[in-house]
Amino acid sequence: MTQWNAPWREQALPELAARDWDLIVVGGGISGAGILREAARRGWKCLLLEQRDFAWGTSSRSSKMVHGGLRYIAKGQFGLTRDSVRERERLLQEAPGLVDPLSFIMAHYQGGFPGPKVFGGLLAVYDALAGKRNHLYYPLQQLRYLAPGIKEGGLLGGTRFFDAVTDDARLVQRVLGEARAEGAEALNGMRVVELLRENGRVTGLRAEDSETGLRYSFKTRAVAQATGAWADQLRRKTGLEHIRPLRGSHLLLAAWRLPVAHAFSFMHASDKRPVFVFPWEGATVIGTTDLDHPAPLAEEARISPDEVTYLLDACAQQFPAAGIGAADVLSTWAGVRPVVSDGESGRKPSDEKREHALWVEPGCVTLAGGKLTTFRLLALEVLQACAPMVGRTVDDHGAATFAALSSQPMPTLSPAQQKRLIGRYGRALPQLLALIDELGVERVVGTDTLWAELAWAAEQELVLHLDDLLLRRTRLGLLLAQGAAAELPRIRALCQARLGWDDARWQQEEQDYLALWQRCYSLRIGD
Image (tube, rainbow, N blue to C red; front, side):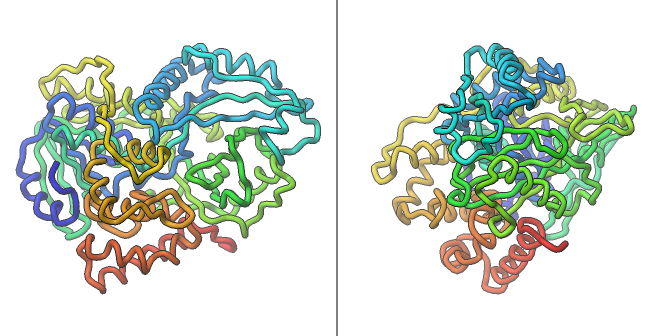
């Protein structure tokens, strides 16, 4: 693979715009990355364009869970659950260190719902769909060892089951890496402003480079739109179905403040919605909300004061002795879910089904909805719809999303660090290891992130702005106090030259990043 950074992007853009493409994917989240990966595997000439940054939208602000959608069984969505649990198992096998098992505990209380028998029956169906038994009930005395500090009044016991957890933004990067290794190209900072049509058929698109303001026209046999909540902005709309943007927000705490070894799932007392407290990246997360998001999609989503109260109340409900308050929150994030709605009035956000939809017009396929876990299946469905436009056929032979890697000697790294880096960097691992040999294995204090990972991202992961580096290539902006402000001098010393920024550019980037963090990732009490 060639270098993948801002100087490469500037040089390559005119040449990429001059090519004839089989497929252009619009949208750089997990759905778009998955489509690009499956097209590249089949030898299609394919390009991905993302308006902001890879995983900038929902795919860096999810609940980080790779799960089968247990609650969808209760809604009768067995097909969605079956596909999800099977894809979860694939990802666990193919990408350990990036997608890892996570145990969940549902505590059962006197008179509460669901009770042990009902929940056990639900899990029996869940396990059957996955093809293995994956749950166990613990009576009160045993549960105390697994769940110290949870509310005990009326506690009967608890059920433990398993799903999986990931770093969603790194998952997108890994999938893009697989696509690029097989000939695909991907560009961020490219806003598609219109689809180009001839005789009613989409034949290309026009996109604006956010870095220069220049516009480029691209020719292609097919366009696949995977723009999430933005799906309604370019497609030709027919029928009543539309995107209903729903916001899900989260709070992140230092792990020492509320140490949990499992994810705790429970029903919020105020609205009976399922909420979670779970471990992630060495921290503890409380989530999530499910609200209509009326704000303009061009603005970065952010948590509201009411959501902060809702999530802190949830934590107090399940862990009353911990005394978690606003002062304990290190960061927040809010993502906008692209839920396909039939427009029925009065339906609560949580009652909307999570099924996806495809809208097809000549030369263009638009994907709306879907789940992180099933991105491979969604990609195949999109490609099958695009195939007649491209003059191809698409079969699913069940090939792995992630290429198998040959073993690499890593004597300076612990087994846990080796597993983590293999999972996150895949085929790029040998080049990253060379940088680790140069820079050492020191971690950023309070995280598992190596300083060498920051240097690698600056050199080879198409970072255009500082928030790309600190909120998506790494998660330091979420995991460290004040968005990692205290570490910025050292980050600058390591990364400024690698990014090719002069002093004025760095200072502006730092100012913009800290303002963004305060506006959209801090607690924002008093708004």
